[in-house]
Image 1 (cartoon, rainbow, N blue to C red):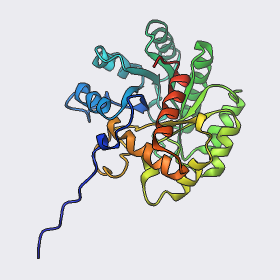
Image 2 (cartoon, one colour):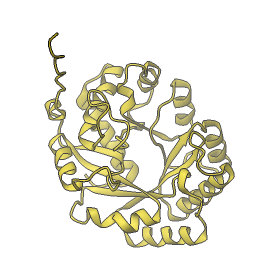
Image 3 (cartoon, rainbow, N blue to C red):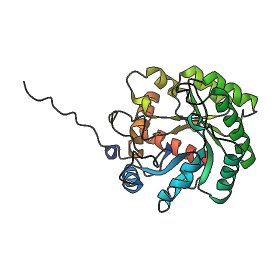
Image 4 (cartoon, rainbow, N blue to C red):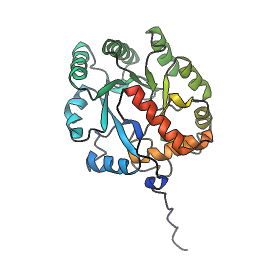
Length: 276
């Protein structure tokens, strides 16, 4: 019996996208990127991704790892206590975040914050308390919010509306729902960020939802090192692979890939207050 032929994957550079793309959500400071951020960001730039949002999962991660990006001005920052690790969030951490935002102009949004009932790693009321406190901080700082919601859609929506966040600059990170959920999020004036799973064959419902998102409210993300899109699913994700997510969105909408690429980048720059 002969050897199984190795599948050839298209390179992300082969899509030849213009150098304007923005990966709105990445975790390049995690230990998965053992080669350092430089080569990863260089590969991204070669594929048309020229700005990346690095999301720090708490103040300690920010303090420890922000220096990794000292020589990479194309990276902007998002900071918040993730619901799976917010047990210690209180006045001291809120003050530390307040001071970080005051001194570091690269910090553009509060996030990813919200509720996670999938892992349930933190008591639900503790999650809700940290969520409410960080929403109040975002309002105080006049910064946009990046939301994490997993297996907690109704509770997340209810808390946001109870706190008066309808119409507030808010990005629903890692959107993976159906058209009905997309409509409910959009009805509040919020935006959605589409990750790599939109490329998976089983996610037809998600692709249907993507068709109905107004192009001026759609962002793209990798959430790397997780959620790698096809055709690199199973490998560590990185910003260069954002191009395949854009391709799947364009195909679902029946429009030109370049149109999706440029619109999502413009939306990210507007949402995070970035310069091109």
